[in-house]
Length: 484
Image (cartoon, rainbow, N blue to C red; front, side, top):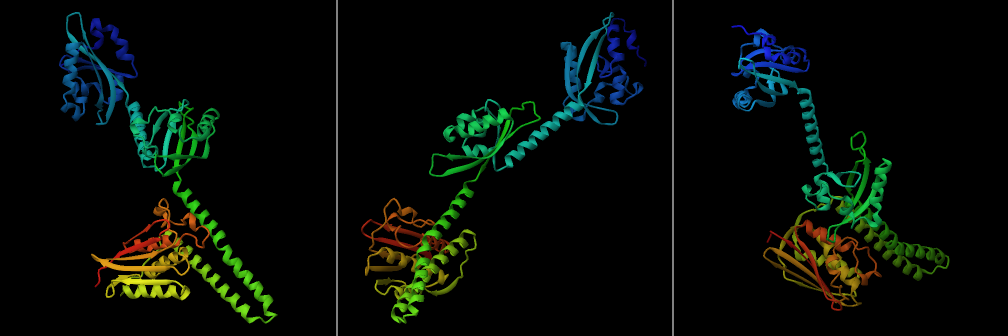
């Protein structure tokens, strides 16, 4: 079977320049069944077929298996025959089986004899599609990176509208991600930006195209907890919207709190250790002078005073050391089996050695209970409770210890008759470095009860206190036990 060349279709002569001279557009001439009658050189160059290999075959041979299953070739022919034209944007397969993304249009034409033909014009847009796909992949990749970044990240335009934000930023400011875009950043931070300092820095960065780093902003989320954010800004250069800026919000609340804790420690060390150190030095200076006068009685008194101050220093240093170990995660228990009542007695006897003038009574209802716990640490808790009561109680005041057991839980209560603790301060007495206002003039650095809490929590127990101003306080701890 042979076909008449395109140039011989008389009323199609105005298509001849398009057909023969086109370098970019591949052109096929089809009959109304989709049979290929003729192709131009641009088609041969793109698809790799010789004319003899493709003429007389249905154009559906160019479609992918997926598009054939969808019936795309038949739909295209139907649209051309019924509507006069059809558009396509899909893959077509080259001779070497490589799929190429094309875009084109098919047009219905007739000759003078009324014969119907379809002129299919194809444009190769494979490079554009690859670029689009690469860009989409890159954008997806960037989105994945943004989602994985723990810091808040946003892009602002020159009007300070948010063009893009990651999930971390949404969490920092407690706003749904899908409601952030196009919001005014100025309005968003207005209540947090004191004196418009951050707003001014960003505006200046956009106009000068110079970024900044380490601007601080404090975020209050309608709670007692405050977030401290470190903000950095970088102009987004080499982009069409070169006035955009990238902002990164790093939550440094924990670091700032750690810095405050360090400052607190240094402050407490400087303040609390100064007095006993001064007293020790003064005693030693006096003793040096008294040695020449051979006044043994006064020297003995000064030595006793120095000994007490050294013990105070040692206690404070041990508390600081233990507190540091707990914060660093190095707090371990040495579990042994022992009689709980004997442990209480040893703790009380230890306190009485240094404070014989105090009347410490013990109501012990667990005489025969054996527990598995860290004996040394529990003695530390009991002695801390007793020392705390003695510190805040009147001279010769009575102190009571009540020990009882119920439902495999041992509870210890230490009651004093001191000034009591204000109700507003009671929830914080086990916090690190906390000291009630009425006790600021007494020695101590506010770590004793904090250490007690950590020790009891390590035993899966609880600590708490009850107090009424003017009527003393009761400090409790409880731990579970499995041994009888």
